[in-house]
Structures are given as C-alpha cells and as structure tokens.
Amino acid sequence: MRRSRFLTTSASVTATLGSPGVSRAAAPHTGEPLQTVPDHYAKLEAFLSFLQERNTSQYARIPAGGIYEESYVRIGGIDQWVTIHGDNQANPILLFVHGGPGDVTNPWTFVLFRSWRRHFTIVQWDQRGAGKTLGRSGPDIAPTITIDRMVQDGLELTEYLCSKLRKPKIIVVAHSFGTILGLLMIGKMPDRYVAYIGTGQVADSTKNYSVAYAELLRYARAMGNIEAVEELMRAGPPPYSSGTGYQVQRKWSNAFEGADEFLPGTIGLKLTAPGGGVQAVVDEADGELLSANGLVPQTRILTEQDLGFDFRLPVFFVQGAIDFTTPTVAARNYFNLISAPQKAFVTIPSGGHFSVFIHCDAFLNRVVGLLRPLQ
Image (cartoon, rainbow, N blue to C red; front, side, top):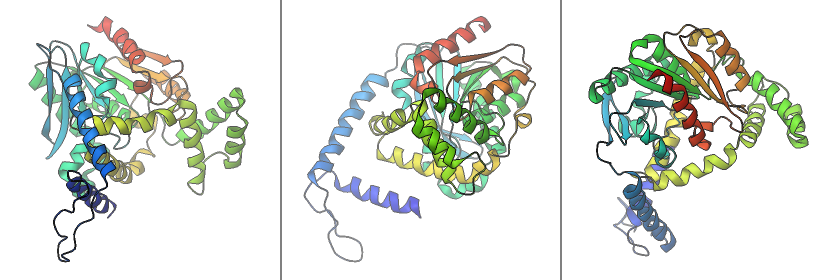
C-alpha cells in the first residue's frame, strides 16, 4: 500500500512537471483537471535534469580500454541490476556487496568510487528485493528474499562476471549486511575469489546491540558527552521492550560516526546521478522496507559460527575505529578466531560504520596495500 501511494504521487508529479501552471489531461472517471504543479517544482525538475546530464558527461565516460556497462542480468530466475565500471579492463574485478538489508549504493557512489576505477573494474549489484532489481521484479518476489537464495545469487553473479570479463577470480568487498552474504559466498566457492575484504563487519548478531551499547556508553563518557551518557543510561542495556532503546542507540551511533552528516547527502547524489532521479529514491526506500521485513528476522539469530571460521583465501577486515553499528570490538574478536592463508585487521582511525564511503580514498589506499602482495 505504501509503495502504490508513493509511486502514484510521484508519477503524477513527474507527468505534470514539464508544463508549469497548465493543467494536464482530465482525471480518469471524474472529468476534473489534474492538479497543476507549481513553477518552483518544474524549475527543480529542470535543474535536476541539468545536473544529471552534467554528471553523466563527467562520470559516465569510457576511457580507451575501459568499460562502463549498466544492465539487467538474469540471476536466480529474475532480472537483477548490475553495473560494471572501470578505466582498464585489464584491472582486477572488484564486486561490492552492499549492506542494508536493501541499502543499494549504485545510485550515489558514482562520485565516491570514481577514483577506484583506476585500480579495479568495479561491479555493483542491486540485490534481490532492492533498488532497481525490486523496481523491475516488483514485491511479489518477497518469499524468495532469503539469505540462502541471495548467497546463491551472488555465486551466479560471480560466475557471470568471470565469464564475461574473462577473469578466473574476483575480489569481494562487502559492507555491513553484505558481509554476511560475502563470507558465505567465499565459503561456498573459494576458488573463484582472490580475497575477501569486510567493512562494517557483522560478527555475532545475537550480541550486537549489547556490545554496541557498552561501547557507545564508554565512548560517550570518554568524550564527556553528558547528554549521550544520560540518554543511554535512561534507555539501559538491551534487550528492550519497545523500539525506544534501539532508537537511542541509533541516534548516538549515527552522531558519533558522522552518519548524520553523510546520509542526507546521499539523497542529492541519487537525484542527480547518471540514470538517477526520484524513482531511484523511491526504489531504494521500498527496497529497504521489503528487505528488512524478510531478512532482519533471519540475520538477528546469526552467530560467528554461522558465518564461518575457516577460509581458504585471504581475509581482511578494514573497519572504522569508532563503528558502533557493527561494533569494531566485536569484529576484532571474530577476526581473531578466523583461520585463513593470510589475514589482516586494519582500522581507519576517525571512521565509523560508513568509512568505506566517508573516507573512501583512505579506504581505497588500504585495500590497494592489502591486495598488492597477492598480485
């Protein structure tokens, strides 16, 4: 219901933006004219179109020997949105597995990941039930939104990429919820991956909020933030009988990690991205809701044992030092239990849960440094 109401409103506005102050066709069944769109909305639409064209010319360029492809790929019985961007097709393939659930990054990383294209062929994938994949399939695929099915999707995508781009292996960089999929993927098909790099790394989901609460309270006290200490103390440690306690945790983790400043800015990028716009914002919002309904009950019972301890390829964690969403201390404890041919735990000192985006160049430098000995 929420989706249809939002899309109907969005479609009506989009249909009328081109002729400010002039009624469009009569409304069905009533004969009444549709509501006109004020001039300032039409001017906004024109300005967004200008920015989209500018960003397309600036960021969607294909250098000689490079690749810039965006298309639906048949994966797991449905069309799923996949983008492939790189300055040199000889570079290694890097598959970025987004978080959420349903938090697609395709619509707004055209700026942030631009420098990555010099080192890697960057692949992004709107997962089942998210972003443009959801926009194509619709919500009827909700029963198929399971961790097992999405891991299989990731494996099918891996095989597609290796075949299409003629590489025997790819690199996986996974963020937040995506680290669950990423670890399960490399566990099932290790011979297809060069290395795994997790950030915002999930560990024991059954203890996540308890660990995060203790770390938030410790940090608030160390920073002398009396307001945060008092609010956290009033909420108390989890589990909570209502959503209020979790809201308090999210409020202060976002504040300390810089997410309060970063996340609103992604909306502007979605609206002005090559191929972006209002529909991209709508699809992401719908995907987050649908994906959360299906996946949160599945993820919150996962422990470190479910993710695995023994891996047959290099495993690296690049974690924000002040991540209170997937707590850094929990990620480190899990990392210490992992066995892999090579492994490293690297922190970004001032980074939080969204370090891969907020500190994207520093993150890239660490990734390049970790992977260089493997080449």
